[in-house]
Image: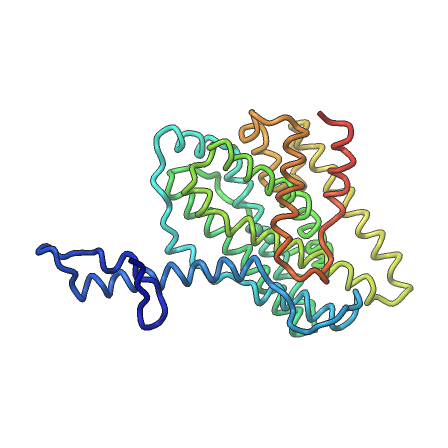
Length: 332
Ligand SMILES: [Fe+2]
Ligand SMILES: [Fe+2]
């Protein structure tokens, strides 16, 4: 029978832990209650990172101070305080371990997170608004935490890594932030679908998918934050600066497209390769059983699902999904 403790926690498992004489000890009960509380805390943090609505009612004007407050608070208040050091990496069966360790993504994934962290922090240092600045600092901290998570993962599974390069602070912090933001818009959209494909096909075992899941959702929060920042920032510029800013955004996109064409052709384009996230490298291994069209459909569905829990008044990343829908018309 389901029992509820004084603090309202379910104790289904607590009563069923007998001691060596077949009776439940106070110590065993305390351990089980602590485990239940810890599990509930993890579930609540996970729910909170995926679902957020600003309590202020009514419409907001994109580009207004209210908009700035809303997208900054979205990032700050959906932060999941998990600690990479305590992640319990699941033991993998030999075939699963072979699949995970043979993916050609770990070096570029670790380096992408390291570079993103430096770039986001560099841009945060240029921002005067205290709320926006703290949101950007949290974004940069989360990138640094992704790098630690990945480092722990490769350690746990014995994956050898190349020595890491230096991550220089960009001469133009705004350019570095734009390159990271738009790069994440492309790569997160692809990662949503690839991650779901790896889960559905069993390429990644369930336990590993669950362990890594918060990192993927965090990238979803980052691109939601970024597209709202980009819309707010454009509107906050004086009219005479907008053409220069638009030109800079186009330069960033040309850079990102060129580096991805370089990767597709297997060309080492030097520094530019380093912006590329792991989905480009992972796609072949993870999607053998999927047609390109089915993979695009999966990316679109997952993108919708991951964005669904956030305040509907915030803008959604729509440029990459629109391109994907266009490409989908010509791909089987
Ligand atoms: Fe990241
Ligand atoms: Fe990110």
